[in-house]
Amino acid sequence: MKTGLFSLFNRVGAWVLLLFLVTPALIAIPVALTPKRFLSMPKGEYSLRHFEKLFTSEEWLSSFFQSGVIAVSTSALATILGTLCAIGLWRVSSKYSEMVRAFLLLPLIIPQIISAMAFYRLWIPLGLLDSYAGLILAHTILASPMVLITVSASLATFDPKLEQASKNLGASNWTTMRRVILPSIKPGVFAGALFAFILSWDEIVVTLFISKFNVYTLPRRMWNGIRENTDPTVAAAAVVLIAITFIAFAIFAIQSRRNAKRIT
Amino acid sequence: MQILRKQIHPGWLIIAPLLLLVLALYLGPILNILWLSVTDPEPGLGNYAKLGESNALARIIWTTVRICIITTLFSVTLGYSIAYAMVHCHQRQKNYMLTLLLVSFWISILVRTFSWLMLLGRKGLLNVALEDIGLIAEPIAFMRNELGVLIGMVHYMIPYAVLPLLVSMEALDKRVLDASRNLGATGHQTFWRIYLPLTMPGLVASTLLVFILSLGFYVTPAVLGGGKVLMVAEYISVQLLVTLKWGTAAMLAALMLFGVLAMLWIMSRFMKLSTVFGGSSQ
Image 1: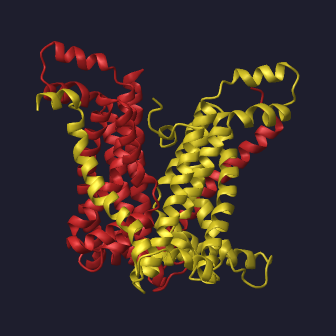
Image 2: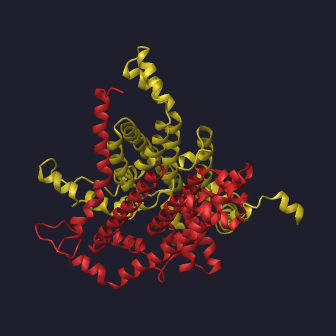
Image 3: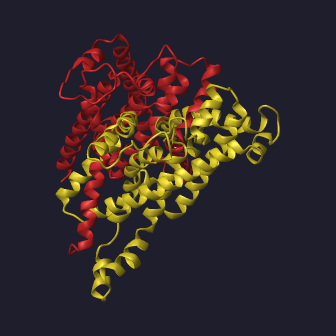
C-alpha cells in the first residue's frame, strides 16, 4: 500500500507513543544513583550506595529470596497443572470441555481485588494467611490460565495424527505423552512457565491481602517503599527489576526466534 | 465402572486437578462473597440499598466509572493508532515496535508507578523541567488528583488495547482496501467506510478488555491518586483491612463481578474470547 501523508504522520505518532510506554520507567536509573539519603535526582554526583544497601540489607535480600522461592514454585505448579489440563481439554474437545476452558480462564480476567478478597476470605479459616503455601496456592490459581493459553496455542498446531501413529506403533499413553506430545508443545510450555513466573514475581494486590510479616515478598517491600516515598533503595530495587525484565525478555526472544527457525 | 469409563473421556482425568483446585479454592470463596453481600451484617438487600442512600458510595462508583471510561477512550484511540502503524510498515520496523510494546507490557506495575511518582510530583522531573525552561512559575499538580491516575492508567492499559486490535487488523484481507481504492474511494473514505467497520470486532474487544481491567485497578489509583481519588478497588480494601466491614465490600465486589461478566458476555458476541487472550481460535 502506498504510504500516504496520514499514514506517515500516524507512524511517527506510534513511535512517539511506544517510546512514551518504555522511557518513564528508566527514570528509576538516575534516581537510584543519587548520593543523597532521600529520593532525588542526582546533580552531577553519582553514587552506588543505594545498590550497596539493597544488596547488603537483610530485609531486601530476604524479600528477593522469598519472591524467588514463591515464583519458582508457582511457575512449576502452574506449568504442570496447566499443561496437563490443556492436553486434557485438547483431547476431549467437546462442548463441555470448551465451557471448562472458558471457566478456567476467569482468574485472569476477574479483577485482582476480587480474587484477593476471595483468597483472604478462604485463607483465614484454612490458616494459610501469611504463609508460603498460601501465597504459592493463590499465585498458582492466578497463573495457571496463562499456561493453559500458551500450551493450547501450541497444541492447536500439533497434528493429532502423530498421536494416533504413536499409539498404533504400540506406545502407551504415558510414552506418547512424554515422547511425542510434550516435545512438540515445548515452546508453549516454556512460554507458560515464564509467564507464570513473572506473574507471581510481580504480584502485589493478592499478596497485600494474604501476607503480613512472615512472608514479605519483593513487590510488598517495594509497595511499602513507594508509599513511604523517602528511601532511594526502592529506586535501586526498581532498576534491578527492570534489568531482570530485559534479561527475561531477551531469553524469550532468542528462544522464540530459535523455534521459528526450526519450523521454517 | 465399565459404563462410566466409556461415558467419560479419559482426558478429564488430567483436567481434573486444576479444575478441582480452581473450583474449591477460587469459585468457592467467590460464591461465598456473593452470599455475604446479601447476608452480612443481616439477611436482605440492605447492602444494596446503601447504594441509593449513601452519597459517598454513589460518588465512589461514579468516580470509578468516569475514570474507567476516560482511560478506555484514550487507551483504545492511541492503541488503534499504534496497531495501525504496526500492521502497515515493514516487517523489520514492526518487530522493533512489537519489542517495545512487549517490554513495556512486562515492566513491573510497581516500577512504573514508582517512575510516575518521580516524574509527576511537585518537585518531580516534569515540573522541574517546565520551571527551568520558564514555561510555568508554579509547579503543576500532576498527581494526587484524577489527572495523575489517568496518566498512570492510560500508560498501563495501552499495550492491552493494542494486542486485540493487532489480531483483528492482521486477519483483515488487505485486497479489500485495494479494491476500495480501485473503485475510486479516497484514502479517507476507505478508512472510515471499509477499514474501521472491518476492524470493529477488534475495537469492541479491546474497548471491553481495557474497561474490565480498569474497573478493578488498585495499584496506580492508590499511589497516584494519593488518597484524593477513591475508586472502588481501594474502597474495598479499606473496608476489609481497616474497618472490617465485609457486607459493603462484598456488595461492591458483587456489582463489579456482574459488570465484568456482563461485559465478557457482550464481548463473546463480537469475537471468540480465546483469540483475545492470545490462545487458539479453534
